[in-house]
Length: 374
Ligand SMILES: Nc1ncnc2c1ncn2[C@@H]1O[C@H](COP(=O)(O)OP(=O)(O)OP(=O)(O)O)[C@@H](O)[C@H]1O
Ligand SMILES: [Mg+2]
Image (cartoon, rainbow, N blue to C red; front, top):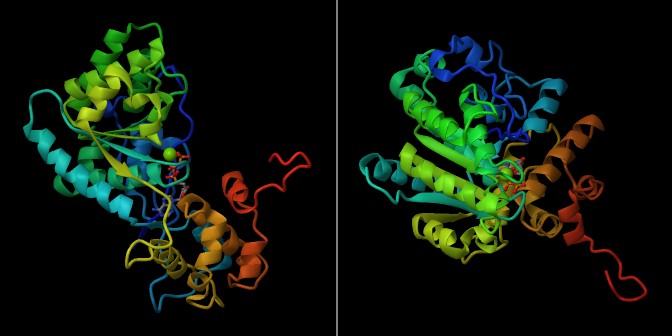
């Protein structure tokens, strides 16, 4: 189930002038794209929002637990490992990967309009972006396998475009965000039409195969600018003609799915649900399985295997089954166990960790005030 490291994009710079080199005329070497030598190469936070940063993220070796019989890793190495930690192949990642593969085939042979797309939806911190990155990485690596590393490094191919919807996005700032990712020298002074033309041309020239658009809950088609941005996205799916995957927080409950535009979107997008992990699902215990996968990846010298799985009910109560809160809890507990020398995670270790506000609110609601309100 364990898969590799997770990574996040940083905040987007709406309307920023793009200065990065265009993929097709880039002179970077394989070495540059892969980040040089050494086993500790890591994509820098925020860097995935430009094409060469995503390529770096996709090609760096992933963090992995030690192989059986491998020499012990130093404290510093293990601190770094647990800070990054592994990515688990969750059911959502699996479903998304399968659906993207099918859509890619469909889209490749469907030259006409109304191309189907996917929307990953779920609450905050549920693993939506991580699932997108896993699928994006797989797509990037598949291209390298087919055509060799030179295709993406000096050949200027960009299999995956990852774009964050800027806050209060207008159609133009959204188009500029695409341009920035692709390294097209676009500025806010250019007309929207010419930016969009350049983006469509660059996508074709760089053989983009998968477009991933994150944070779509920021689009509100009930406002004039939001409606134009939603229209732009629809136009891009028609013009670029590749597979589009969107992600956003609980999108079916947002204005995105209302009105005429909402109906158009609902008619072509399938949903992939990235929900919190329940304790039980029929015969299965999804949360326990997740805790087991993460526990098996720990590299602590005195940790008793299975002790974290036994604490699963307590851990579920603390994290509400959200993978973001769970991984944070385990990572912080592992770092505490390394720094205090105990090298094991117990309930006492977990009790001492303060989680994100959402999880703390869920687990430890504030005491009622005198008036009875919270
Ligand atoms: N499959 C996974 N394996 C291991 N850790 C994961 C996985 N998915 C998510 N995480 C952890 O949970 C954290 C939150 O995940 P992510 O950013 O993907 O959630 P999100 O749903 O995109 O959140 P938001 O709605 O705030 O954008 C990540 O930083 C990562 O540490
Ligand atoms: Mg996200």
